[in-house]
Image (cartoon, rainbow, N blue to C red):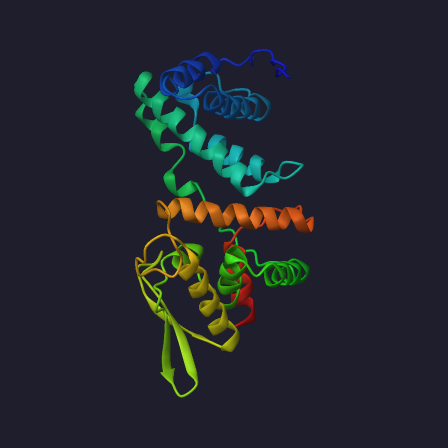
Length: 267
């Protein structure tokens, strides 16, 4: 379905901003250009409604024009999400810089500052729901195949999927009388660590070792056979998880990292 084209914005500054967008966005995609034009339209609409006396670029001021627009974005109904607010600011700022250069008005480059743009909110890790966790663990146990044991190992140790793929065949280490730990090799944070484990996890490692012994690929020191690149193995396990979720009727998109966060919530 094609988008309905809105009529050109009638504002004295519109031609200047249009030229700046054309100049700055010459190598950008159509979708990116549309986003820049949308921000310009939003700003000039605010300017025309709240500051109709602004007819020239040299009349633009940080206070009240830019700060007033930012305040309007914050107070609009329905409220603008933080990510959308940030996008508005980071798309207007380079256009003002472009105008400063094209029109030889250097003060325009200082109207919207880098420190005005807030940091994007960090998304908190999403553990599995109790129902998802129970269903998946039961299904992994029922299948008792390579993928199921890998994901149970991740769930009960908090390992990342990439760390699991790099485990050595002798990763299970004795740390004392009836005490065991898994040696996790260098991972995402460039650190290695020992993860204490119970008898259930020890059995998981033994089963994975059994699966490795059945694989026709020659021994390479790893617990999990790697027929190609590491990314290929990781993609195989992600596809496995997707297939298991589909078989259980779990419509929510579940990713391997959520098993790690479910482990963390129990600590």
